[in-house]
Length: 210
Image 1: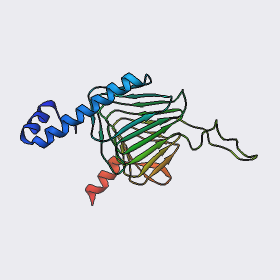
Image 2: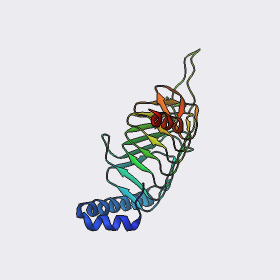
Image 3: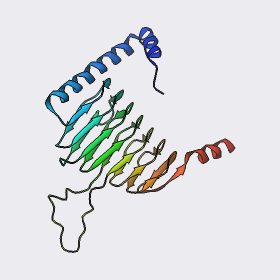
Image 4: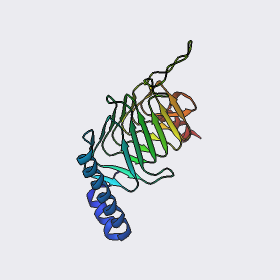
């Protein structure tokens, strides 16, 4: 749950270390906004942007990060985004908490508002189709867009691969992998590869009945 300004102010007064962490994170985030705003026309980051770990954005494609996003330190530090074509686009919504995530995009990756990630990988292609000529009789999978709905939670070591469409309020459990497919809203997605999502409301009813 995102804290209100009043709650943050009270917490800063009660805990000076929390204030220092928030202040330095805001400074680092503002630096990245200014840096990419000055030196990369294809990158746009909304303010405020809280950063407590390294942010790396590279490639010829377009990258948009919404307002009130935060980058947290994790096992694999920070946020890494790479685009591999001029038509590529990575669009991250407002209020996302991004920790240790890597995004590799050839076509399009959309992440909805308030999404939260642990160490995870989002990648819409396996092989660059412009640089590899398949042998006779072999097929190279084409890059396919990825869409994550609002309020999605990506668990640790999860993978979201090309063609995956994940519904709002969904959870991708730790170590799971989606390879294409459409997953319903408010579902728990498990497995490698994951085949379908389980309705979270039914799981909660089962838990109450135990």
